[in-house]
Image (tube, helix red, strand yellow):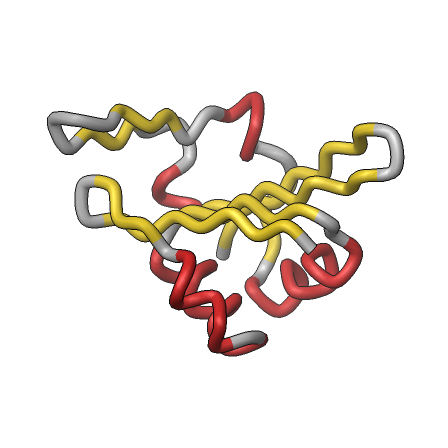
Length: 96
């Protein structure tokens, strides 16, 4: 399960996703502090299969967590090249 929140800005559709256990956590590795905030990521709780439907409509994807990143890689292996790790947790931003 994961959380998905859709943000619309003009013609852009930003889809924010995170693994459910990361919502509300702050990831810190000493040089980066990254908040997986409820305001940005805390939309609706869905299965990974359901999340893929939201991703299809997004022009910008912002995802954090092993489960959602694995699902994105399954949809497009090229995603792996954009992954950054913060405190052992993968994060990716995709702009189409």
